[in-house]
Amino acid sequence: MADVTARDLANMLGISTAAVSMALNGKPGVSSETRTKVLAAATKLGYVTPKSRQSERQAKNIVSFVIYVGVGVAEQTTFSTFVMRGAEAAAKEMGYRILVHYFYADQPWDDQVKRILSDTCGVVMLGTDITLPQRNAFLQFYTLGNVPLVIIDNFLFSAYVDCVGNDNTYGVKSAVSYLIRCGHKSIGYLRSKQRIVNFDDRELGIHLSMTEHKDEELTPLQVIDVDISPDKAREDIFAWLRAGNVPAEAFFCENDMLAAAFIRVLKESGYRVPEDVSVMGFDDVQICEMIEPPITTMHAFKERLGRISVELLHTRIEAGDTIQTSQESGLMKVALSLQLKERKSVGCRKPRN
Image (tube, rainbow, N blue to C red; front, top):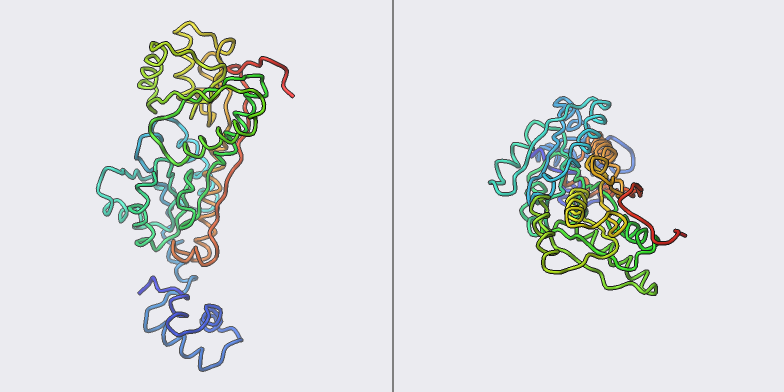
C-alpha cells in the first residue's frame, strides 16, 4: 500500500509519529525493539518514505493546472488567464511543466478526477466556481489523491487542503467605505444571481462597511440582482430601470464585467457616469481600461495568486506530502489583500478625508 503514512504506522503500533519517524530514519531516541517493529510493519504494509515519493514525483515533473467550470462565473472574465500566467512562470523557475485541465461540474466526476491525478506530481486548481452544495462531491480528490493539492480563489476547502485566494470580505469593505468617504449617502449593489463563495464573502464586506458607517445617515442598501453574463445582466438592468427604479448615487458591482455592463446601460438610459451614478468593480481585468469612463476597481494580484499556489505546492512536493498528509504538518490558508485602483468611474461629492 503506497499510500500508507507514518501516522498509520504509529496508530497500528500504538506509538507516536515522532517515534515512527526516528525509527524509519535511523535516528536515536527509540529502542532497538521499537525500531525493529516499525521497520517490519513498514515493510509488510509497503510503506514508501517521503523521499522516495518525492523522487518518483519529481521524475514526472508535471503539475496539473485545473480550471473548474461550474456556475459559469470563471468563464465570464479573464481572471483565470492571469492566474495561470503566474503559475506557469513559477513552475518554469522550479523545473515543472504545466498541464492544463478543465474540470466540468456537469460531467461525470470519477473519470475527470482520475485523469487529472494520473501522471502528475501535484495539482493546483482554480476553484472559483465550486459552490457549497458541490463540496462533498469534490472531496473525491481528498480520498483519491496521492499527490498534494492547492486550491486557488476559494477558501471553502481550507479545512482539507491548502488554499490561496483574495481577501474578498475586507477588500469589498474597503471599497464600499471608499464610496462613502467620497460623500455618497446612497449605496447600491449589483449582485450576481449565481452565488459562489467569493460573492458571498464580498456581500458580507458590503454589510460590514454599511454597519461601520451607520451613523452617517446612509439610505438603505439598494440591491439589483442580475445574471453573471454581461449580456443577460444588461437585460436585467434595463428591466429594473423600466420598472421606474432610480439608481443610487454609487454602486459596487460584484466584478468588473458587471460594472462595465452597468456603465453601458446607465449611459444608454441617459445617466452620466460618474456625475449621476458612480460605479465600482472588483478584480481589475482588462475591460476596466477599455470602457469610458475607465472603471475604478479593487485590484486583485492575480499573477501572484498563481505564483504563490505553485510555490506552496512545490513545498508539499519537496516534503513528499499527499492531500491527506498535508494536514499533519498544518494546512496553509493564504489571503492576499486588494488594492484600490482609482480611475474615472467614481466621482466624489465632497473632499475625501
